[in-house]
Length: 153
Image (cartoon, rainbow, N blue to C red):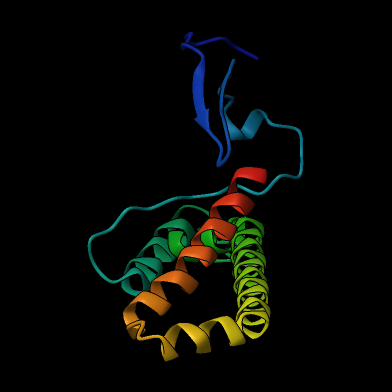
């Protein structure tokens, strides 16, 4: 192989971290492997029309060169990000179910507390307590329980 120049390390952005690594560029004719050659084309027009013209240009240079697996960058990224997308959806579902369970637990504790204090609430109402005061009494106890639970966690 012939060295024709030197470049700096490449900062490669992978999806979860940044990697600085040395890179070398080799002419495709000198590469001894079976890796496919990827051609990336940027266009502001319709990708389908550009695909046909790029295919014609490749076949004009080498008629035996196969062209396969043509896709847009969005399709490529969808395939790359499928595991991250699945993880995000799974975490969202688990967080929502945890929130639902916490809300049901708080409702259950409050319902039990109110059922235990039914006589007291009835007595307060009979002695002239307003509905807002009774509601403040019940909700105040619920807020105390919620804050206690958050402080413990």
